[in-house]
Image 1 (cartoon, rainbow, N blue to C red):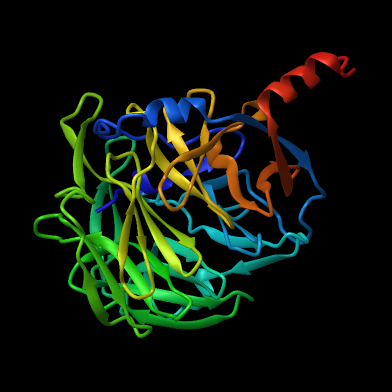
Image 2: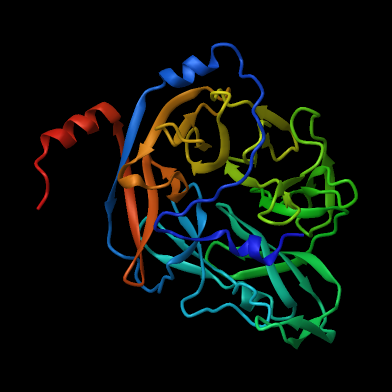
Length: 390
């Protein structure tokens, strides 16, 4: 189970923090792939600020990365303005998902209003598609309050009330217009960590077996029941989604290998972040195709940026090209891209009509950023030719 601290650590200031995690070594790349990647042209992305999004009060605490749909709508998950950590255990406040269209019209997806009949709701994941917005949550269907003890910061003992009712996994479905459509229980035999939805309304669930922690991938019907499990190739996923890393002054800590589901036309791509394993494209028919990015062997993908063409991968460690544009068919590198002003690759929401969309926070508002990519050499010559601004 993910700890409260690990969940809240994914809520980051949009002003420059990015996620980091321990990865696995990449196996030797195919011969010729490293020179091909290094020879790919280098581009620089420069951003232009647009008018603030009206009608939305924005908190500077925003979860990265952003998400995007094929029509250019960007989805921003933020801590609501005025929200505070909730005592006594100081659990993080629920996030608010907001979509912003290319015309800067905003819509909200109030998860709390859609789950009023459930208790102790905790968001696990969400997924934005062209037809629906879905949330994966853990919650209880009843309230069984029990007094439990905890240790205060001064060492004394306190008590709090905890709901001890059994928690279940639910899928909450919204329309793109922000209307709550339905809440259904996911009836599967494994722990779901990521959820996606196909244009047909069927779901793709990715997670792990609670006994041996092996990765599981399955298609669910639109009522949340199992349609069919999908078999992962032995070289396409790790034997276990659990890993260990040493804590500071403590024993090894258990963590779940991070993953990401990204829409790709009528398919969904499973990204196994910071591992040696390939991208997995899953079709609506349940067919799985492995995509092997032709990256240098020391690099790993830490996430994909939604795009209406090709694949844009955030890589680590960055080498002057923090984003790699890949051919979606064979994984070859088409371009390497850097971001001006020292921005992190995780701050790019999506690539739409050749533009790079992002946001920043300013004076309590969301400020849209629209970026264009030009050859890095040209950008460097232009910056040298222009006099410094006063």
